[in-house]
Length: 415
Image 1 (spheres, one colour):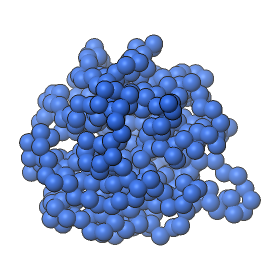
Image 2 (tube, helix red, strand yellow):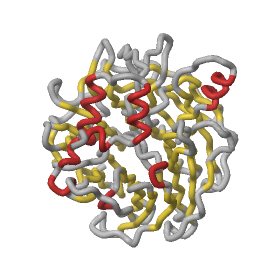
Image 3 (cartoon, helix red, strand yellow):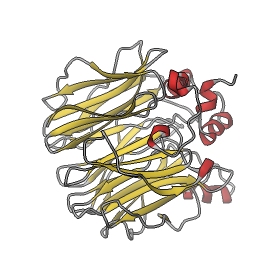
């Protein structure tokens, strides 16, 4: 029987690993935690539908009137459905697109969905357009609260590769989108130059995603296979966190504020000294508190530290606190995710014990100065997506897609 880890990897992720050599032990362990538990009782049978029960990734968003929008990818199909009862039941799904094996469904890829105060919905996802894993980001819109969507269209006109869209909706209902862009890599290759990674590109839309401003670069040198995290500061400016490529091929994390004037200086979160040409497929998380404090969590296999870590910054990323480990040192920890409101901060992550994956939580009521003891929220024996956090009104929720136990939307606290 084929190794379940190899079976569960997407073709792009697997080819990337093969081309770049044997991944480090930590990266292999991470992929095992996300995928090998597919051998759980209900997961032994191959799941072939495009429904939520077969989804590999699901992204939630609460509308201004309290409905849950959920977008997911399953067997090459991108779908959206709604729930008026906190995920207990869903409307019939709306199929946005069908790309089959070309859909970007790797470990760090997921559809993005947001909605404005008028009920207009915007969605973005990526698919591979050739055998060399060059991708295209498509967007679709709804002007009837998610009941129907426009046909997907390409985000940009550039013919190189774009992946991992990350979308935020600002208080004024404008949309910010960032992504991994490889046009500089493609241009270098045409000139006979070898260039690693990709670039962090971004754009804004003032009309619900119908049109976007000319794209700009925040950082011309980033990891090409890790998602971008985003949040909004108290002024409504986007703040992004991502795995940058520093001199010497070091793939450590950075943050940047994207103001009206453009991308602000690149700020290094920590000196982990992870020198690698492999694809970690494991991006960071960021949230900005009510007083503007940056909170970042990330995964690394650097020479100076290895595992999942957390740090914060009170000066817009100019300096960060000493990184602290997330989870116990011997545990198989991954997929941290942060949410904040005022001075309250929530941090969730996954731990895999060889048989089941568990979602853990710890909280801070003083903007990250002190934290509660970790507590386990939920466990599942089969495949599971990344744990995510979001809020409705004053209530904070864990959103977690599991194969064996269904989609979980769990109240975890009050803002």
